[in-house]
Image (cartoon, rainbow, N blue to C red; front, side, top):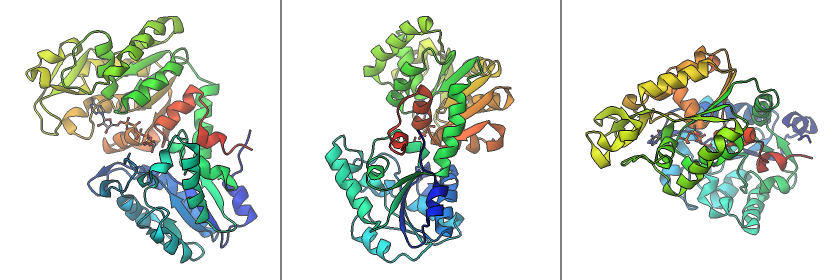
Length: 408
Ligand SMILES: Nc1ncnc2c1ncn2[C@@H]1O[C@H](COP(=O)(O)OP(=O)(O)OP(=O)(O)O)[C@@H](O)[C@H]1O
Ligand SMILES: O=C(O)[C@H](O)COP(=O)(O)O
């Protein structure tokens, strides 16, 4: 199956037409400062191509996980301000997504102008499980494009979401694959069709249940899974250790126990940290110490200690596995890298990825942000994917709604 491409759309002619573009502008923020603009830079070329060709571009995007109504902290304002700084064309942000502001500003666009609609997740219908609700929201987005609109999906990071702005709009408008989605799929396809072994997957981050879900399909595909970040505590709990105040998804313990049971038959080895950096509280200047992973509650902070990074012994062991691999996929920071004191594990993994002869792919908004924040260059890695969950689900071989809906 193939999708229509952006170049085909441009060849059809877009001057004066309203083109709805789904971008992934879900960038990390510190207050109103964008701390890593990787996804904005990656989204720019498609928007620019359409603007240059004279389209009136309506960009949809999400930021964070608001609960279905407007929340100032999840406004796209900082992301759009950065986009406007980088863009050689006029960019505006509507105050709402499909309301009066969006309609009025869309109506006043000139050829080549770009209007970003406010966070699509400010409307609960965007992420609804109910097809009719999502469809109704999609209808309102589509209505903004008038008579001769089209849809371009360029939000690789969101292609695993069956959401109105990703999936449903594509069922209602002539739809095309953006260049970013195209490039990402090409690189990740290489990982799945011609995997050089050993294939090591490094998992971390804080979206614990999302990431645990993908392990099911990685069993048998990956030779080794290195477990760090927030999810490591659910693994430790699954083997009977206490994790004090660390991030724990207790309801996922049986899931992890099942994975551990099935792993050796599947030919996949899990490597779980043997030491952890435990802090007195969740703060950049918290007191902290390294303890054995089976003795977290024995740290000076007792039952209130929080594990915020993998320890140095584990980091070194992970680095050895990475250096001996032929293919490495990494998603999710090993610890709270935003705080210098807890960035050691993530830094060690990034360093090992730059030293291994393996083909390396870093996936995820926060993982990409981590490597850049820690001073590494994109060019030191085989590929830095803008997709976190999306790249993982692609590698699992799952049907991704945002991709399959574009297939003709
Ligand atoms: N031990 C831990 N406790 C709490 N948070 C953690 C821990 N380890 C890592 N994190 C946090 O995980 C966050 C990143 O997790 P996430 O799962 O979102 O990564 P990602 O997949 O790269 O990003 P995305 O899914 O947004 O593309 C970081 O902000 C980091 O601080
Ligand atoms: O950060 C991401 O991985 C994408 O922007 C998707 O965000 P989500 O996990 O909140 O759907």
